Amino acid sequence: MAVTVRKMYQNGSFLYHMELIAGRGGLMNLVNWVHIIEDEDVSKFLHGNELVFTAGILNHSQDWLRLFAKRLYEAGVSAFVVNIGPYSRKVPEEVITFCDHVGLPLFTIPWETRMVDMTRDFCQKIINSEQVEISISSALKNIIFKTGDFESQLLQLEKYGYRRESRFCLIAIGLSDKPDFPLDILRQELTRIAEQTAKSIHDLFLSFVYKEAVILVLNDYSEQDVAEFVTTFINGTKKKKMGWQYHLGVGPNRSGISELDKNFKCAIASMEMACKRKETHCYYDRLDIHKLLYAIADRSVIRQYYRDTIAKLEQYDRENGTELTTLLRTYLFHNGSLQEVSEIHYLHRNTVTNQLKKIEKVLGRNPLELEDKVSLMMAFYIRDML
Image (cartoon, rainbow, N blue to C red; front, top):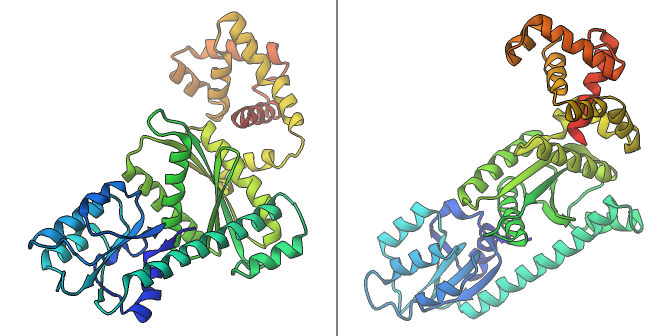
């Protein structure tokens, strides 16, 4: 749980006379740490998402501060602060213009303000934020996985603003590994984008890793807020151009902390469906019939149903070099229209009818009868989720 630039600014404006002069568009940038830097070459050692202070000790030319700002931006710095004094008496207009253009927050502090006091204070706030995140994450996971005493976990969450009756939306993100970007790096970057996106909408946000998936917890977000988060998050990942492939499952947005375990299972289910459909994202509330299937606790029941129906037809296709399974799916999901099946598969209507009779012989179910149509469609829905 990083701290946003805006939060730092709110704390620093009164205590340290911190003044924002450019880059307002980047106030929701996340800050992972704080540094004092005077040599622009040091910027190559930054990790990104830092808040950088400078007095401009090496500011001996008119263009130095602009080049310094440019290097910081290229290094992924979240914001920087200029200590106005004997080395940097003012911030040139071209520096302000640059920071406004790229959305890099630029602040000034008076010479009387000691940078060492500010950096110590801000670093402590970041450390405290991380400790709070660990505490909240532990309590949430204990509630989701039913570990420990529920009431004590709830009291821990309420201490930090997560109320008993709050609305919770859980989002699960599954990632595919890439040669150039190991899974842990991809996961870390996705989490950063998610946190920055979430905090631009609402302050209460949490994430944790479950197996190989990233789980996001949105607290007290409206349905519109959740939709905005998903859209903005997806657009934000596209801008990074990291070549990643992920599948995002959006669970229902339910009230009540006691529903967290159910929300979690729904988020995982919708993530799995997004993966099987090869879609970027999938909303659990839009799964229709699949919601009923995912609600069946005994998975062996639906697996056996699949084996007794479509699996037999798939085996027949493999052994005989036919494509009856594909033809049956086309027939069922085009309202049983022989004409549409004929056009899609370039077959004569009589051939389609003969193929359906062959399917009936293999499965013992007549695709022309309503009851058997329903059972076979259900089998295809099951196949989609297995």
